[in-house]
Amino acid sequence: MRASTNVAPVIIKRKKVVVAGGHHGGAWKVAYADFVTAMMAFFMLMWLLNATTEKQRKGLADYFAPSVPISRVSGGGDGAFGGTNMFSEAELLEDGTGASQKFPDNKFKTPGEIGSDKTGLDADDKAQFDLVEEALSARSGESMVSEDALKHIVTRVTDEGLIIELFALDGAPLFEEGTNNPTPMFRDLIGMVSRVSRLVTNDMAVEGHIRAHPVVLASNPVWELSTARADRTRSLLEAAGIESKRLQRVTGHADRKPVVRDPMANRNNRIEIILLRSKR
Image (cartoon, rainbow, N blue to C red; front, side):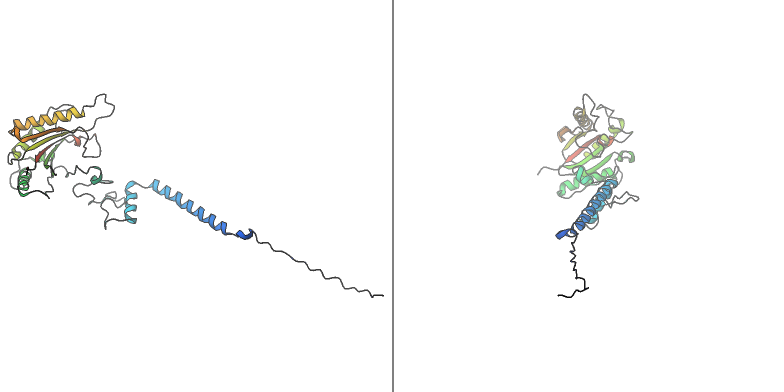
């Protein structure tokens, strides 16, 4: 006979611990947080681009990727000059991208000033062009042009020769509106240019340019009118004493070569009289 006992049996419970997420762990949370952060940064960038001006964006781009020590176009600020650098163009202050990109063939001085780049000229042509500019600007004595007339004249040297540009201003047109009838002021300008041009012997060319007209016009007269004004200028030059054999070309360019950003501005109504370089 076996003796009885009061000792209770020992029960061992084994508890299995399961890690949440299995073998993936919490890495997906880090990736998701990075994604959300990137999306937030993207939408902030889009908002900032929409809230800034073109000048400010250009200033930011110049800051992060400068091509020259000083930005020659814009600093992106909003001060007295609206972010525009006074040295953005060598001759005339331009906004945005500057004239060197939009109007590469039409560099011009501020109205009323005379000046040109004579690099590449031979000695004879340089002497002839200097003589004409001195007569116009009074650098060598009495000017042949009055102060009021100087407001309508600029000169520049191109590969073709010395261009004497006569242009209209608001309230001071060269021709009667829509015609090739010259105003008294334009007749005076032609008389002055004729006297100056007789100081040299270079051949000449005349080019007519006019402002753009609204596209709603049924018949756009830009080609006929620019050509008619150029030809009228030729006849005025001959009447003022220029020998007809010196006039080699008369051309109308319509509204295809504006010199200011607004194609319908009066400043685009102009006549260019070119003293051609000597043929070698």
